[in-house]
Length: 94
Image 1 (cartoon, rainbow, N blue to C red):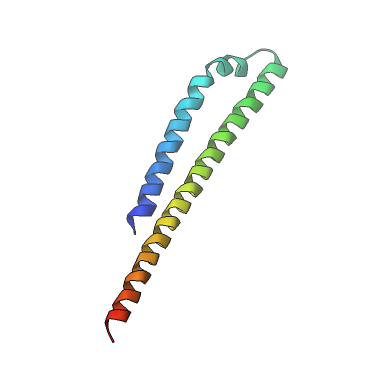
Image 2 (cartoon, one colour):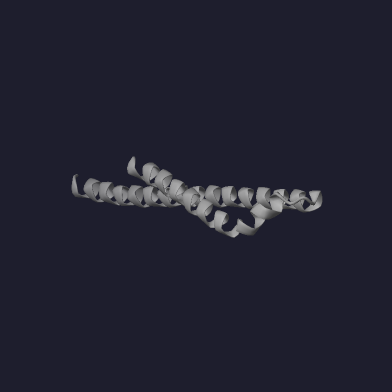
C-alpha cells in the first residue's frame, strides 16, 4: 500500500503544474493591469491575482484530499476482502 501515497503525491504535483499553466494563460491581460499607472487598477489586479492563486491552491488541496479518500476506500475494500478470506479459512479449518 506504499504506492498509493506516492501516486497521490505525483497526482498532486501534476495538478499543481496544470493549474499553474491554466492560470498563467488566463492572466495574460492581468499582467498589464498589474503594471497600470492607475493605482486603483493595479491594486484590483493584485487582488484578482491573489484570489486566482488562492483558488488554485484550494483546488490542489481538494484534489489531494480526494486522492486520500480514494486510497482509504481502496484500503477498506482490501481489508474487507482479507476479512472475508480469513473467515472462510477459519470455517474450513476446525
